Image 1 (cartoon, rainbow, N blue to C red):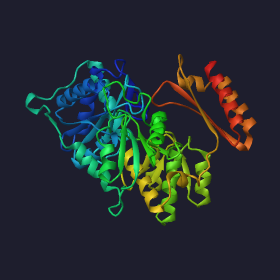
Image 2: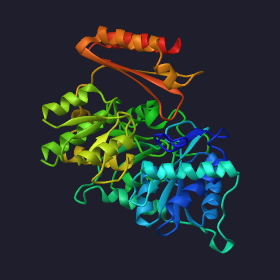
Image 3: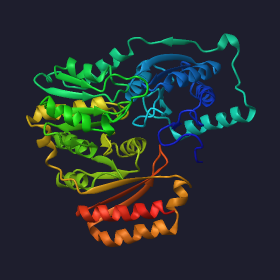
Image 4: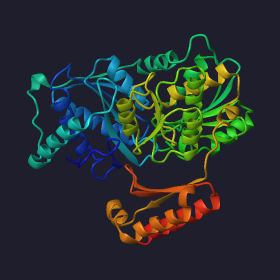
Length: 450
């Protein structure tokens, strides 16, 4: 059964347009509260990033949960992985994150974590959707009796608890003393957390993009816009730079030369470090978008590699199925399941810093063992029609076949719809950059012409 409201990463959209409206958020809180608190402590945690719309959606969710008889603990601006962790440690029924991750401030979203710190399963999401349909059909919520209404409290030490958790994933015998690190928090949820984690572990930290005002989150900064970090690393002659996105569940690096180190290269560095210490647990899970260079580099170390569908929830599913511990995406979603239950940008960055210290090498040297193949990604924004209907058109299918024939066994083509935006992503990868660019543009034109 397909979902009507939940996408690959919860509910997401433009603020003020369905479903990111206060009335939907209230009904969602009621439906989720009814499902999640049917057993357990009848309490949920709500965290958010720094978007101005978070205030509105947080209040609406509060009302919905309270109507379902569920208590609410507010933790304020907090990274997505922090909510997953805190939901587990506080023994809550669920954690709720109000965030649109790397999207602009005018978008927002709502996603849930179970009391084990993992994302909700399909059965739970479908149960919530069924109750949502009931709420819309009757245009009312089945509010519990007044004496059973949920209460709301605020947890003031949530940031400190999460900082200590992050530090706990870094070996006690190591220190970041002597390292100069530039940290870009994307004016997002980790602005008051990430710099302190690295400082408390001994690093000299230059913190940038750490002054959120409600509308500057991800605005030409953070993991999706690395120019300011690259400049800062060079100006301050830093050892490296670390960029998080708006909710800090993804991370990207910049080395001392100002060169970007992306998620595929981070996965290689972590896998290589584990392999050299004899600690690799099985293999590595990437996605359909993972660079072929990663697969080839892992193959040289006899490390198995499998591809999941795009989206960190699918990477997690594949990791659980295989029993492996390491996976992620080129965008910087890194899953290290021996340290965290979900993608965690700060925790992943600490594992890279650990590899740097234990190897005695610089970040640029560690990534040198992997050679990325030229890969071109073109995002085609849809102005009309659905992504599914466009992908099904004969003209688009023919363009893909033609490109595959041109590339032969030297490359590959992937078309997929975005799970969070009205986009079709056209990816072409091959050993020849000019050919890669040419074929990506050819397919993108075919998609645009529909």
